[in-house]
Image (cartoon, rainbow, N blue to C red; front, side, top):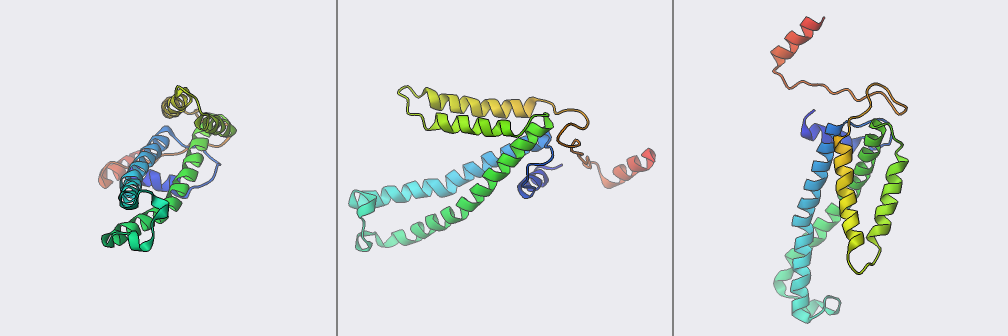
Length: 187
């Protein structure tokens, strides 16, 4: 499967049944990284820039009245609002798809998807812990990388397991005539 076909499959197949191969998991994680990077680049950096410009005008963002706004700030403000309103539902959709892809990857390894819920709860608890030395946030980063590496490297179970049959991948990267020739030889 090609990259965008795999991402489309993962984004449209929002359920917790079945299995995902390593390739599907890795492709979706690459897409998720690119989506987050582009969101940061085109949504959050302009929002931060707009906030700095507005704070520079009056000293604090909440105390700005319409008369205090620079005349040329309307277009960037509208861009930031629209970009955020478009990015927010898309990021929720990608987050739900990520949850489904990760659970299906666990299914491919013959583990229950509830393990991922425990993982998320632990990460959430560590994220909100206020510690003096930043150890909790370091653990969150290391755990995230560990998840990526473990899920991406472990081979799924061969054959059927308690969750489903293995995902069949169609390898049709060869030209059409070679593919048809191979198909005829198999028959």
